[in-house]
Image 1 (cartoon, rainbow, N blue to C red):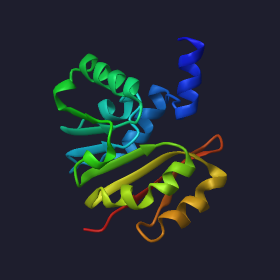
Image 2 (tube, rainbow, N blue to C red):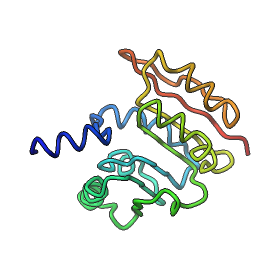
Image 3 (tube, rainbow, N blue to C red):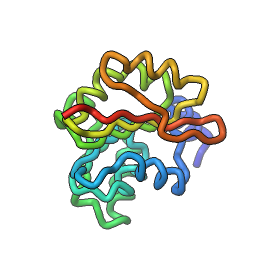
Length: 165
């Protein structure tokens, strides 16, 4: 990877999650009745392909990330199930699971949009949050969902909410 690519990825906040952590977060997010998942910052699509769900939608502002997601989906034999968008306005109205692994500030800004995209009875799962930011996230989501810490390790938390039916 060139220095320009690294600089661009850093500017966009592109940090890729190790596979074992992806599996742990997905296991918290996906529930037996779930059929659809939305990742609003899909990066290379690791969370989407690990979900095992049939209706998979990824969004990313980085065109290279969308290419990487499509490639990853094909390599994992789920390319026919993955729908990708560069524009969040084009995403479906609701998914059973909305899984966002991005930094706390964008998660706070996106609170109304992310919560509105979770189907009734669905799960919202947020990762990429420092432990010290958990209360800030709870406050930002309070009008939309009751976030709880699902898991905490090495100064990071995964938070989630079950939306009412």
